[in-house]
Image (cartoon, rainbow, N blue to C red; front, side, top):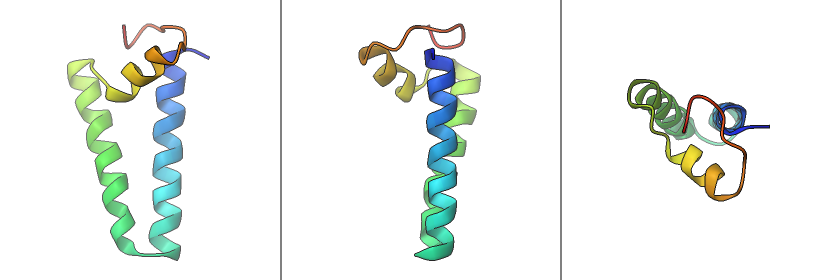
Length: 67
């Protein structure tokens, strides 16, 4: 797994968990979904993603999108 796939998997988990929590706990958990979506949009425009930096420091091999 490279950084690109790790970032996509992480974003998917965040969206799914926040959607489940918004249904079961509180609708305010949708704010986490909003944050994840805004971060993905920002990363697609700038090419910079905080999660990619964390995964890189953890030793995940570099992909093509986040160098």
